[in-house]
Length: 397
Ligand SMILES: Cc1ncc(COP(=O)(O)O)c(C=O)c1O
Image 1 (cartoon, rainbow, N blue to C red):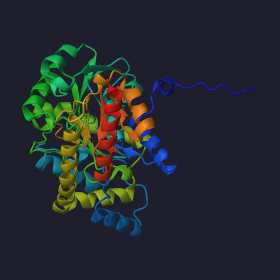
Image 2 (spheres, protein in one colour; image 1 turned 90 degrees about the vertical axis):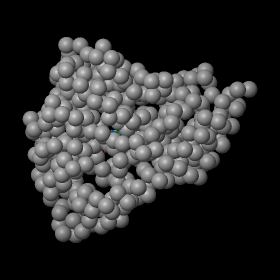
Image 3 (cartoon, protein in one colour; image 1 turned 30 degrees about the vertical axis):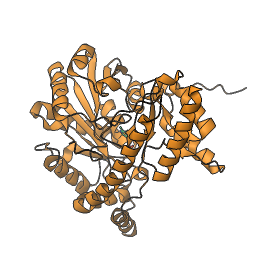
Image 4 (tube, rainbow, N blue to C red; image 1 turned 90 degrees about the horizontal axis):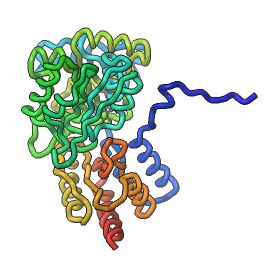
């Protein structure tokens, strides 16, 4: 008798990550010798700063190879609380409110699991990071997206948020700087949105994983810092992956009001247990040597900034592309609907014909756009621009 596969509701409903799929396809083509220009990766093309690696190696040699407290090693939770108090204006935050998790992705998932029950609605401005709606569905919730295109600077406004709130709404997700658009909300914009959420009695999950990757002098603001009410309503998620080039380390963070932090700690203790023990010692050294960390980050930002400007200029010089002046993260999200085909078709064709890997907008809730990551070499950017230009010219004929 053949064993019939019967997947759960959760497994049947979940879509695989399209961004990881593009990256995997580009890597596969490269492995068979194809000269691929990869704009798909969501990770810095820099190595982790040496002193962070050394601290991890030291921890390994000292035998820090055992289980650690599930919510994170106390010194790292303490360092996170200090950072949120001193740098992000989250007055009075304690280590008990800060959790270290196995990746920013897992921080997001646990934040959602902690507040969403079956039937609850979660407001997600689109374009959104691909995983939010899937995580909401895994928690039994319903994602409600609000599309905000390039004309609106890819930013939701308070009226749109207010109009989307129903009695079932329990959470709204903010992500500034944004993946995939690179848009950064101003303090005033975030404040107005936060006030709407507080008035309606809903939680905010503020994903700030790109908080240090900013250009043109724009500033990052944490909604949890706005007021006592905000501190009680905001779950701040972040991680070490993007800022410190530590994507493979799998270290995320979460800061939440005490009762939510406690719930997240329980969820984590029953699902993943602690984030890798010796990796946390590397992260601790990044926090304890902040000046050193920031000089490594600033060196990376300088390179990203140069690439950002040349890519925006290059794209806007081609017919058919319309690229906004993104000021954060390391993504651009140009409009390509003038080419008269879906983003999925556009991306598949450009990979096939020109060996350029980009991520189609559909997975971000934004058909008509594609995402390009400039966390890639100058060589790839220059060569990629030539190929994109040739491709767009060929479509015009
Ligand atoms: C907006 C956003 N949040 C969270 C994450 C999760 O990062 P990680 O799990 O590597 O810490 C990512 C990674 O791409 C992201 O873009």
